[in-house]
Image (cartoon, rainbow, N blue to C red):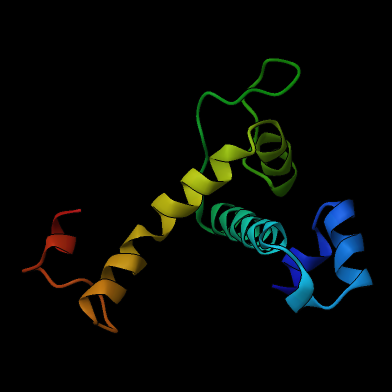
Amino acid sequence: MRLARQTLPAELAFAAECSDEEDLGPEYEEALRGQAAQHLVKLLLVRFGDGWTGVEGPDGAPAPLTAETLDQFLELFPGVAGTLHASLLTPWVEVAREGNVSAPSQDTATAEA
């Protein structure tokens, strides 16, 4: 969450500095959750992603999957971070819903996903 707080939009960061966090409106919490989700998506994709298709650089060549190109992509298409966050975390959400602390069981609905 510290990284999310450090990268909040300037007006929300200023409001947070001027008042106590409990006095901030719901837009602050929403922005904080959004920033945290975007950083998690970036971390997962940079660490575990093996490439992407259909994304080109300014010269028309395929863009590499790097932290910089991900930043540019997420800046151009900000709503994509939320969609990626939901789809990347679905397996963990399913495990938590089952109440397991291990991998999805072969005999459950999560095994079919």
